[in-house]
Length: 306
Image (tube, rainbow, N blue to C red):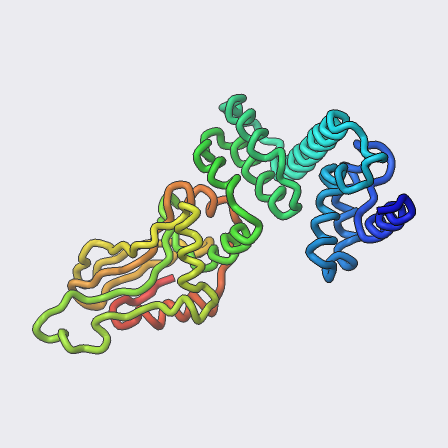
């Protein structure tokens, strides 16, 4: 390839990739604005151009220029490491800034664990998505205000979640039922009455809450289970006597279920301890339509009291 062709190729690449101006530090600080400004232009770009953009942003495009213009690979490696450290610093400072806004001025009896905070830094330093940064900030604020509220195991699990997983968690909150102490989180899936001589052929002996009609598919449940947030095998309550009452909380609204018949069982999907920790970070998001549909579905066996 001629020198003129090399120059033309470089010109075309620069026209379709993000060109980071100024110092490395400035490039990192303005990285989010660069992503926003180029989102429209890159949305319909070819996969090749999108890869070139990513390579440029992470300083991995050194071998894509002509050999005579390539910096030594050691220099390119140092530049990439420097940009990576600056990006990590920027991410962490963003999270700290967001977390401060979730903290109160109240004094707390226990100090935050420095070892926990060190682990938090390691897990959060590469989080650049604004939505995910906000969730990490909530984790940090919660742990500082209530030391021990968020385990290291939950922290490491949360690190593996994608933005899609985080959005699913935000959605699933409107389906969750908590105990009064908020230590157990469930999604009620139905109820049944133990078979007997007089109800064996009754169409209402087994009833289901149609989660799919309200946007929660079985695929979503499998996704939660794959991330160790939910037990995919349905669990059941103990066999309940007639007029026995269970007390729950639905997104900040207390309510009770009372059995209309003897030998009724409530079925549900239960969140893992890690899933419970993460779900409790998210604010209440009641869905009146779903709550009313759940009442109707369970009405053959239970009466509701707000």
